[in-house]
Length: 526
Image (cartoon, rainbow, N blue to C red):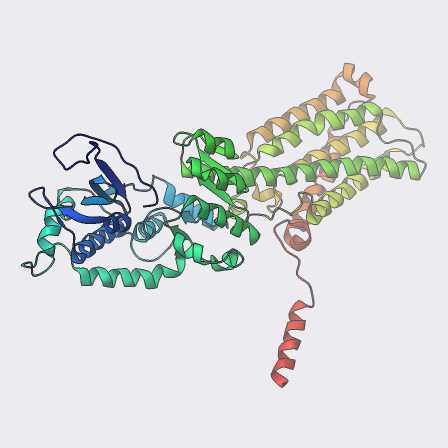
């Protein structure tokens, strides 16, 4: 027995000389191997034959194939003289939403692997029911009187193993053998046992578990070996566990996930994440939230970098060509603190598109600031700088900087900034494909920025502080028309230059396909 649990009790059954009576439960294979007798119909202990063992094991496999967790029971005055008492099946169905969660994770490129101490039949049945392995209708089972009548009792074993019995009235052993063979052929490549893992060398384990989705009859040491083998293949491993023995695997995994309700304190201390509700669907929500946060950070950086690059380049170009500064210090401070603040922060809570949630997980080595992100930021900054300097040069007709000159320049830069913020809400969708009302925080941020900008332009008190003056409706319409070209640039990038400006597109070498074709031709000539 892998683990022996015993307790003493008083009863009518035979007890040892010191008054101890042992009760043992465990895997049917192990318990039956330790027993020499079984309880008959009258409660007496009779010899347990090989046919009786085969009958009990066949019934346990039949129950396990229905998704039941099967335990064998035995008792005796010592651990060397045990009497088989029977087997029980425990129904532990998957929780609501597990099947949908596994489906969503697999669509998102995350592989779900089952590691359990249950038998092969139970593990495969639960894996089919949860959608971890596919094919065949999952077998549902309900524990009712009709099913309870089929569970072999010691009296049943006594009848089936007696010499007068002509056959097994409860089991069709041939049918069970055929069903087991079919499962082995259909799902054998998807399952490995703990003993099979022990037979595989540590150096070959990473290659041997490719495609395996179910590991059964495993010990805690096997979980640690599996974590290290998957990491050796370059996988990012998240391991769930709740027991003390799971602590080493939780610590070694890239993301250790412990159960908050049923987990031990040792497992919680070793884990990186604790599920407060012990619900597997929470992991799916966490993965979606993590993907959303990561992509929103990229959109935030794209907006912030383009604004900073535009302001810095505008001042640098003006200085290089001996032009007066297009913006004064207070206007630049207003842009950095007020205008960039609320819109940029609202980009962090942008609802994530379903395509992003279905995207494959990124590699650990993938940078946040990519070449595509810099391309978007630099191109937007170049257009904003060009429009702002064009307006400034047009207004600077007499060579002297007036309040109108700086106000027109200031208003143009801010409007370009706001249009750029709207374009940065998505790295793949064009502005007309994004719902204006999907992010209420962004709407409030834009409304606050626009109201603040009009206050700076039209309130006399703020006009004296920011050196601005009121603009006409014609000036505002001209500025809006010019600054809206930022949306046109963004549409061109996303429609025609996606391979250079999208983080989800991969650039392929131009000569890879031609080179392969050439090699194939040479090989055929030989």
